[in-house]
Length: 244
Image 1 (tube, rainbow, N blue to C red):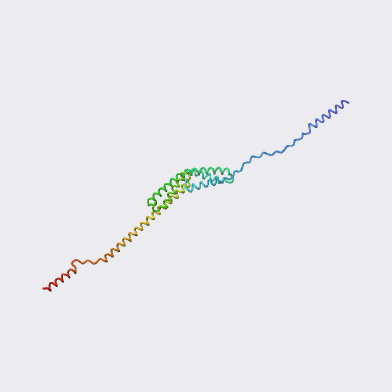
Image 2 (cartoon, rainbow, N blue to C red):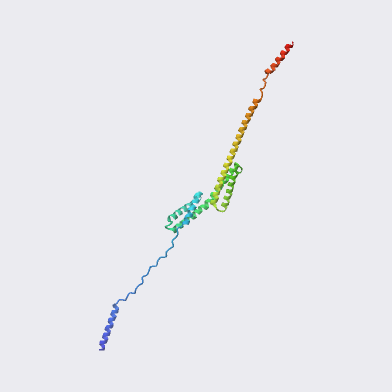
């Protein structure tokens, strides 16, 4: 009896072990994971200020004809400006880099070229001032001449302060004023000379008229051995004959 009971227990245990071995373990539930997002880069704003500055500097170089004073820097700046404009709006980071480079190159052109341009313009002003003085413009066209000297002095002050664009413009204005003063003085001299010539002509004409009038008022001179002498002699002879 006891054996049978033990046999049953063993059989049940074996069955339980078999069921445990064949039953799959439940898979633990997995929580879906979200892949990490890449860090977003902040959008680069359009470099509008840099674009405006680069264009402004290029315009200054053209206005004062400075590109040949630093040709390599000018070519580099022009190329960078074109590249910056091409990338503008679509790749603002690249556009800004190129435009900053263009600004640096153009500023180099200006710093190299302006001293040369100011020296050349100053020499022109000096020559124009000497030409004006040669025709006494400081007296014959005093107002215009004084304006020119004032502009030239202001140009020197601005150049000393490093305001090259203003200095050049003032020199250009002084040059025009000195040239104007020379023309005014020359015209005044020509007008004065014309008045003198007209006065001389009128004086000569007056002299001729007076001389003609004087000749008309002077009596005719008796010809040598003239009739007046003969008549007197004849009368005297006749008187003498009568007396005899």
